Length: 349
Image (cartoon, rainbow, N blue to C red; front, side, top):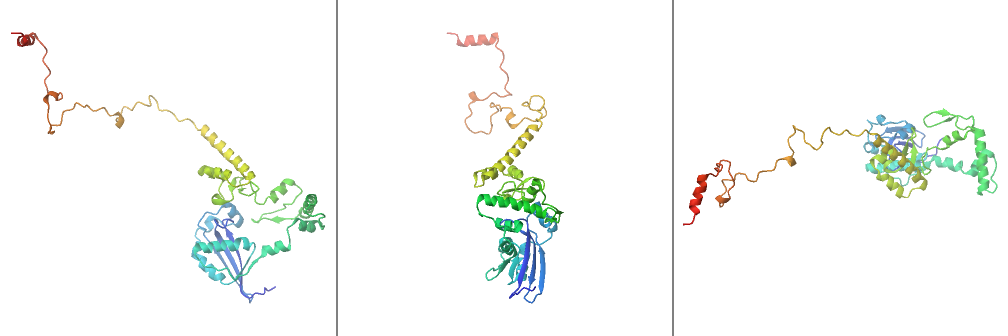
């Protein structure tokens, strides 16, 4: 079937470092430009995002840091991408929520004009979801071939949900399924643990999805400036982040899980401190200086304030007050002649 086009339609898909439009960056962009005459042009660009690609993202799209190390930054090829798309309308899968906004963020950061006015956007996912509705009513009709009686009453909806699960197990129990990495398995089996693993798609720590588990079962932040980082690593480099979250407008269950992680991390840190061997004390009196070491500034001997006066001093020199000089002769001992001289000098006439 040929599409009825009045101008080119550019189908495109983006692989990125994540899904946060304000933080994450494009690592690959592919565009199929379909012309009104039925001809097509295809171009694909690998892009260096200027930031590390989180392992969780690489496991999904298969692009690692080494794969794009030599690729250009988006700013270097953005004009080429804009010129290739030109005046085309845009189409993609979930493109209205992710691909188009992500592309516009990159254009704006690079200072490249790309006008969305007067373009048409076709989101194939929205066609799928609208035509194959994902409501409980649609699921009950699809799997059980019945309509819900007293729809939207709690008991009727609960019973319909139970019947849908039983019908899903019966329908898919032998059906092979392939994940995004190309691994094939049969996920729908009559086992609650297996169903739990299959239905928790994002492997979240808390129901709000602020934290998720990686492939090693370690908790990662899933939002904000620390997205993709291990929660415990963030505690180590920015302990105040914990207090900010606990005092912030986050769900109570999120705070409970965060507190449990913090307490575990803190207990592990305290245990590591206690397990460190005590530092050995130096032998002997630690306060006494070493014999070979020169005295410190504080240990220098006090100056003798009765030093020889400065002979260049031009002030009054009182001999009676002059200090004792080392070249002065010592006083002679008192003898009988000296006593007699004194007696003769001071005796009364």
